Length: 221
Ligand SMILES: [Zn+2]
Image (cartoon, rainbow, N blue to C red; front, side, top):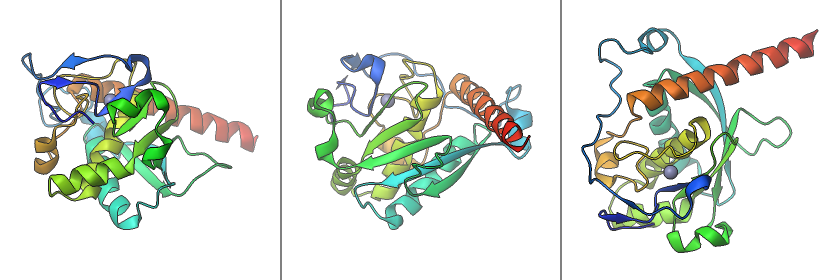
């Protein structure tokens, strides 16, 4: 995890297509966070309705525990709810009946060699179905900053799910998809997808839900 906010070596998370990228953070005018109350928002109707459901399992390989996971899941769910997506969580490793997406909580020793130097909080690839979150680093950073590790976990999970649902190169200068996590935003509970990214995520989740419904229909025929 890079801790210098001026030069960020792709610390928060790595879209696998841009592992070696080094970026300058906060050097341009940030775009505002997604505001679901803004007029003319394309997702207003769906947000007002029930929302599109996304099934996500959290596989706790590192024994982070339900206390932390129980704090993190509602944080991530709130971020996605604002984009019109309702996350249905499963706690466990669903190998036989995989959900739409899965988060693996991993120990440091399972960091891929190519990512060790960057000390990332997580890594995921666009259009894949599994993202990986490094729990021990989250716990360490939370202790340093005197914040609840579960809250930080929630935002990391939300960020990594974003990589799974967004096109490649999903990092932005501000908001939830910054390459380096904004700890101040975590403390304020004020990290969101941009409006553009929220719309892309809603569209992607809708296609996942449609595919799931079609496969159930075929199976029952
Ligand atoms: Zn990332």
